[in-house]
Image 1: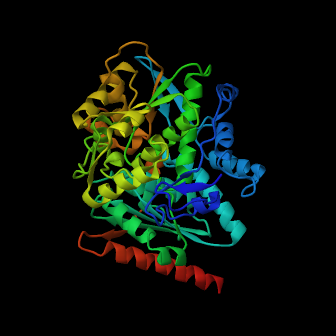
Image 2 (image 1 turned 135 degrees about the horizontal axis):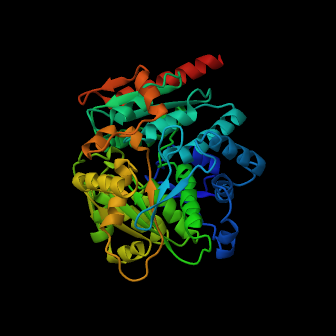
Image 3 (image 1 turned 180 degrees about the vertical axis):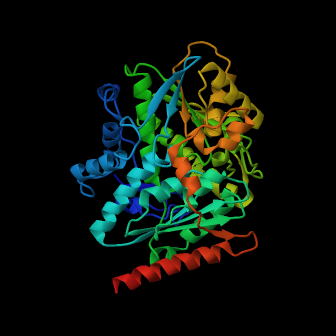
Length: 477
């Protein structure tokens, strides 16, 4: 399998090249597989009884040539990644009142769904680093949960350093901060920035697109701009579908709390491979995805701080991938739309594109008051089950629907543990839940570099990257 840019000028990248890419390509685009291997209903049914780990091997292997990683080696890396999960199943489905299934994706090291795919990425990156004897510096922008998942995947590894920037001043929770700032491994570098996650994305993108600098310092990423992460997230859709419809004879609707759209894109890739899923993007007041999918209005607004901070995003960069896939890989259209969005912050989707996207995607938006009401309702109707606020955004969509005609099975992705969001749980009038991992984070001393709004974030980031390269080269003698 080779990988091409959404904008058409970068083509034929190998899996290893895609994995270690800085994310954004020189033409400004993002990588996607050049083709989507078709999965027949017969094959789907044969996968229905597989464990999540074994299913991951089946799907992920379709995108990795054996010449790059032998199947036995790849399977061993996947086994190693999921051996660290809380449960052998990795993903747990729980039926709730009303006929909906909660798809719990957070039984992992940092209590968030990002661990699932990022954990495999860490193992695969380490495999190549050991094989090549090289070093990579990963740049990660986070709106909450991504940072800790990426840190946990690579902490302590000799061939990888990771630089994480997260938004401060109440833009993420104290527990989310501590899940990053209490990691003291020498290859982990954490910066708290007085700005929004979209602001940090711009800094990261500009550094990554400096071709000479990125090559000199071997810059990569584990954000969902890295296609290897999105590929792993596509497996979750296959597993959810097969658990809910093992006969593979009807559509399944999956509601996805959405920020940058990486998880959604995993679902769109699965759909392109033949998985009969309908994907609903559930968002909070930061409703750029909702507006784009309902009216074609793809435009930025100021980021609102909400109870669900991991999806407080107004520049969902994975929209570019979804437009590419659902437009039939129309690179010219992608260029037109994204160039205008990047220059003006607003673009109107053409009607033809809207029709194509609506065959797979729909959306829902809500606010904090609805989120709190949903958290209380779920607790009351399901024997005290507490949702995280992001999951509550998704459940709000289910509660607010108006049934008509034939009803398909419905799953809602539970993207993080409620133990990470005690403030939101209290705001809903409920008692926060406890977790041993969170208790550990709260007891450890934090250590990070704080950057004020008037500091040169780009310059400071470049300086840290240069110091990492200098240290690595010095160690090599």
